[in-house]
Image 1 (cartoon, helix red, strand yellow):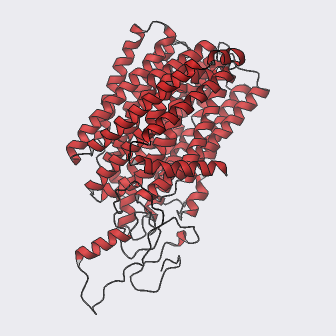
Image 2 (tube, rainbow, N blue to C red):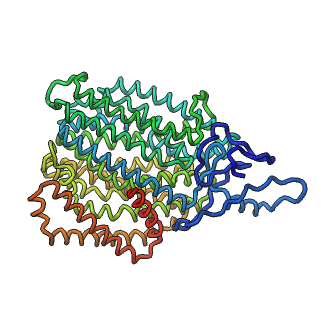
Image 3 (cartoon, helix red, strand yellow):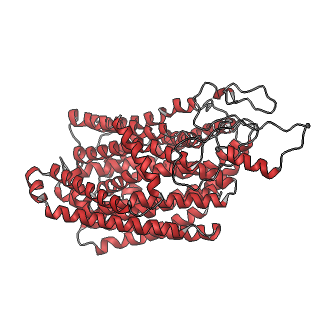
Length: 628
């Protein structure tokens, strides 16, 4: 009955020809009717054995009475795994969510590690001054892509993909073709305009500060073409994720980072270096190498998704014409564009204030943010990517109870996974930064400032993760403007506090520490506002369960960090770092991290929190994959 070629029974719809020959994901089938909403599971424990599959119900004939409506609905809910494109279905149970999370964890870990190596090379090979100019230019494509086709708008695509899969006769195949065609054309137009406006964009971000604006502009001309490939990548990733295909998108940034690492390595070997005070020539070999090599990484990141899309049965041939839902989405997209525009105001203000204070500030701030993205990428992004399609299905279907369960699940897992990391970073920020970055052109003073920035700003991870989860909930319920109001509140708090930082900082180099603190406080305000708004629209959000998990995890994490500080004080760690320098700080941070996690894990093992049943198989799967 689940044969790809279909069946001769009446009522069964043959899958789209583009879907033949592909390898089906778990739970896929050909359905005789539009896809039903996914089942709701309220258990954290992954299933040890897959539930037996039963064939689709035969269409009713006049030979007998029709089945009871309630019974049929219950059967549909029990048997239908979830949404998908082109007649395929996606397993949306908690067990499948956890399996997807585990499978993506290795890829996200590799992505963060390679991104981390990339940032180390940027700082140590280029030096803080050139790194600030290069990083400013390299963030411009991301900023503009976010305005046009970034993660916010692609998250808003999820309900559209769910509707097209459930409503269209072809399971949404034509809709996806039109979506890819329109978004690719839009990304191309925006890229051309952005390249033409490169000097204006760099001036807007840097102002008249300590960073070389001409150098940043030269890099921008070479890096802004990334916009097209980032935009296409974002839409293709959304389509893959909706269909339950997560691994290719998780591994794609690794290829990007590897190309960038190779570029920086080649620059270190054959490059003559860049003088941040010298006259800038865009055609000089060092600038061309860095700019074109970095852009090539983004091109490859987008191209590696194409085979995965073909295997998933997605037809990539252009199909012109606006689907009515895309036209309707245009009004909603204004909310997403406004959201990103407001958030970019906060980033621009951070850049301008940092550049006015110190030439190394932008490089330090962006490195601090990258450090936070390592644990968030492994835990937060992985979880959000896996849960987002299920949220879209439940939101479109109006299943409020299921949405509340998803919010509770996502929040508790975020707390459980991120709080121990935050405690470690807060206690050992300078040690981490010195061990990882005090090499080459990045000296001890800059490493110390980076470490303090990390220690004071690590708490940002929790409200940041919660706000992004809340954002997906609003989008799943097709409420597109509430997240925009939330980011407005976040940005106002962030900008006001950031403007105060230079007046209270004891040294110009410490302004970046205050900027990280201001950013974190802004996200706290956003998380609180999001909770109030969701509770008003959805009712109780299982706050007692979340609070119990938060108290246990926070208490265990603090104890773990304090014990690690005690061990660090007792052992002769100062002698170790004095003897072997920065490598000694790596070992010191490694010992502290292991102690923190062991003590935290030991305490939590006595908590009987349901999150333990979730993370245990994920950790086992992660360890198993790393051994292979």
